[in-house]
Length: 164
Image (tube, rainbow, N blue to C red):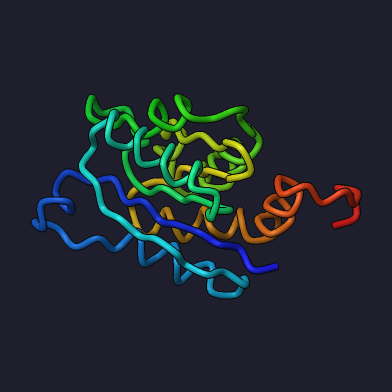
């Protein structure tokens, strides 16, 4: 199965061209071993309403299996990606961000500060990743073993989950 995916980078500075987005490309590079067709990439400022609208539009167009966001997941006042994501989700999958936080906590104690969420809208999976390229790469390691299976299940695959 080819996964049709999008990357949404959330960064005030990158959206203004003041800072190169390295996290979005790190997502694409980190998932190169999977059969993914990258159909959209976009950089937006940390604007909750704009993030919500973009996520909603991408999901509702019906051509997207997976949206990975990067940035805006910390405790700073402008970090609103989790709130924007929750606003569009039909349901959350809390094990994903829990596993990402746990995997990183020994190496980077501040990883527990991320408020990333993951879930599903319609038949599209949305996962928030941190804004640092290093953290993106570490979190991708957690996602790689389960991501294709997750997308298949959300798309309606009737096979057993325990068969991984």
